[in-house]
Amino acid sequence: MTYTEKYEQWLTFDEETRAELLGVTDEKEKEDRFYKDLAFGTGGLRGIMGAGSNRMNKYTVGKATFGLAQYLKNKYDGEIKVALGYDTRNNSAYFAKVAAGIFASCGFKVYLYDRCLPVPVLSFTTAFLGCNAGVMITASHNPKEYNGYKVYDGKGCQLCTEDATEAIGYINAVTDYKTIPFLEESENITLIGDDVFGEYCKQVRKQSLYEEKSDIKIVYTPLHGTGNVPVRKMLDGMNVTVVKEQEMPDGNFSTVRSPNPEEKDALTIAIEKAGEIGADLVLGTDPDCDRVGIAVKSGDEYVLFTGNQTGALLVKFVLEMKKASLNEKSTLIKTIVTSELGANIGRSYGLNIEETLTGFKYIGDKMCKYEATGEREFVIGYEESYGYLVGMHARDKDAVVSSMLICQMAAYYYNQGKTLVDALNDIYAEYGYYLDHLDSFTLKGKDGAEKIEKLMVYFRSLGKNVYEGIDEVIDFSTGVADLPKENVLKYTWKDGSWLAVRPSGTEPKIKIYYSVNEENQKKATERLAGLREYIASVINKD
Picture 1 (cartoon, rainbow, N blue to C red):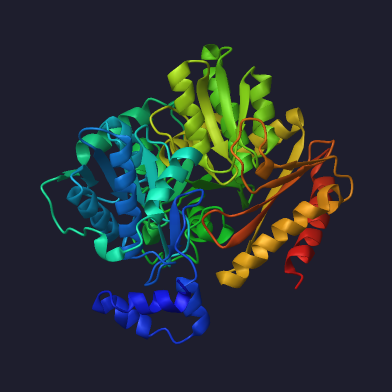
Picture 2 (cartoon, rainbow, N blue to C red):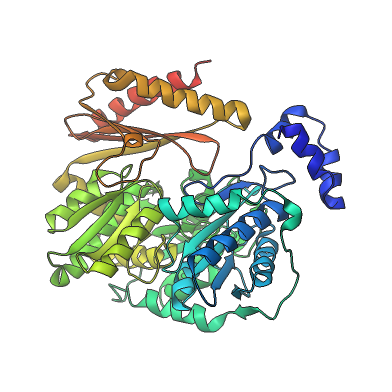
């Protein structure tokens, strides 16, 4: 079916959809709305909200839910139970209710949260209530125009390759939207709230590592998201100032360009507040509270940390606090695009190091396997994109437990007369200087998707000639070790530096990851600048 045929089909849906589509006069936009169906990526469904098969709306959520229901019916006998949660985004609560109604109409027992909540709470809830699956309505850190749909298995882990492929087959088989059993209310839907949320908080509190009194001052912003209540609960007893302008839920994220703590300007207001009160640490969590970014006072300035830097610090802190309980099974898990710095710290403490593909679901999957076999013990997992997890209570990155541990870590060093900047410099002195960076190039629409595909073909064709001195090319699309095949290229130098290229699974972007290992910051900065300039010239070339 062509995009124009799909457009005509959607005009026969409800009046609200028809009115929106009749208002689309730009042919390119019409094509973008219908040239494909919104597809599952590294984080499930994610897309711009609006009418169309390539948008997040009642019908695409309905298609995903009805297809997922058929997958679950085929996989399980007896009563099937599903947990549902949602974040603070526009339409998140509505999409969750749409999904709940469809699951209920299929005869499932549905547990629907009565409030917005973080991703890790839904991950925990799915396993805690003995559900067969969980669904979280969120687009994580994306701009306000986006929403998404994450699917979890009974362990609270996002569906990995084989299960996701099977579920997608059932979803794709739903071709007639009029067969989707939309339902407003049902006795099969049970609202959940304080009791289960309280159990999650208890499990997070068990991961506490340092509770000595400290005079450290902290500024926290939930960036209009779900972290406000749980993060503040975990920081109770510490000197925490919340950014009032960003405290309450706001699906328009009206005080920021994008609610992404990876980006400098997301923490601007928090840093200004920190400067006013002389705070030592700034903390910001994204809307679904699975990522956390920090800025640290250093002299008269606030230094923003990368995900790799915070991850390395957390590894050092957690392992130092837990060193008496570490054993030959203790394991750190990181992704293939995460710096080696944290891994090298782990090795110095005798940890096993495991690598996964990009996406925290692969870390969660490893955790489930450890739990089943007992061959390893999970200590910490993290990825460069500001996601960390300590504890077995969830199978997804958790900014609630991470925020608690980051603040405890900052207090631990503060009581020694050090900042986290000092602690990071100590790590560099011991393990070597690492400079990491991520460049994301947004290429929207059908033309953008085609250019991303051509760029991957081009980079693949260059091999070691992509840049001078490359020692090895790792093409993860051919299958590497026991990892699933994925469209990622990694180029390595003999000194441990590397460059990786991958299309985003959830956004119209091609991402370039850099990790430069040099003897000092000056050399690393110069080398990184040259790399970035060259790669940008390749990508921006017509």
